[in-house]
Image (cartoon, rainbow, N blue to C red; front, side, top):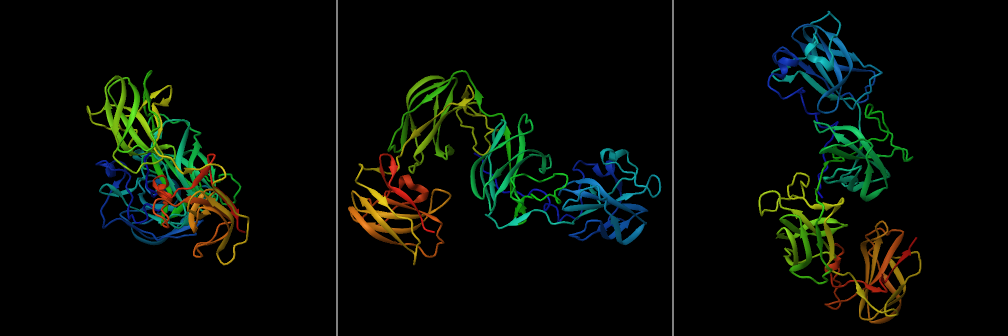
Length: 515
């Protein structure tokens, strides 16, 4: 799945601009405005955070009697007009513009200079019919004489990493899946259509999330999406904690549930949805588990509707990760196909899929970062991808009942010492203590070597530099192959030798309350 960076969306994007462009086409200035020169037209305005009823423009230099016009601003284009004032030819200083209370404030506004070419003293300018409006804005070349400025704080600032979001391009449907969304408190994932200028447009859906990291967040879409469409997903605070999203796109500054910002950038991600996959009536792939596979795996049977590719990926949280194998096959049925693997450190499972070869002949044209735009997409039959999961590694060491156990009573930890009532193992082993990371083992905070057999009343020294969670996880791990050296990596657990024991399919582990 494509993983996109956090991107800047909205209010902070244009604060450094001195002028605002209406368009990039040659002749845009002449078509939509009145041409002038730098010496005859200038506007200077400072940020005025907290202004609600009026703003002051420090300098308006007009080539003739004119208006200074203030609009809402989304960082790229002017929005609704919120106020204006008449100015005279030449330099006008400290021009006060009264703001229309019926037009919601945006965090930024933009001030521009318009000619007074129609009825004197009456602003005649229609945003929807600019070319026919008499009081058009002044342009210098292709750039409007305008300046943005800030009038309100917008967004909820957080430290980088406290809020984050990831999503990738995905097939068109009634929902989208956000791969990961992290928030410092209960919040919302909000999904918008992306406008042509890259800004959030129509809101399509939202869903609440819990504090911390949330995986595979599904958001139902309210609006109909056709074709390939860009979307923007952002994380908004739940200001009053009621689980109801209170955010009005027409009044973002006045809405309580504003988006999070990190280092001045909105915590948001842009991705695409669209048609994906090649629908066929017949195609299949079969492969059995191959525990301990090294260098290659064997695909038992493939039925390809045309010349195709067998594609092998690491399985990451049930989804395809890095590609580790590729083999072309001819149209029709093939059996016992050997696929070379490009990596030796494999996860517990691989995902093997059947892709078309519709780009350059015999060249695999599929980019995980641009799945929707790649020609060699996977085959689908009856709406399901033609793919199979193959187990290549096991986790843990099975041992008979009665040979390994762990008992730890709830206790108040004192002096960073944890008492283990009983730990047993069929061989020399380790008592391993982890923090609670949302119901699963997190950082390791304790480790004690024990002999084969049963150990009672063991005292495990905990890492005093790490604050304890209310619950700790305690497990019994094997000590293989180098005695006395703990060799277990949480990031590569299936390839670590000192894995935990399992009895009757359950890990020899327990949770203990320490508060």
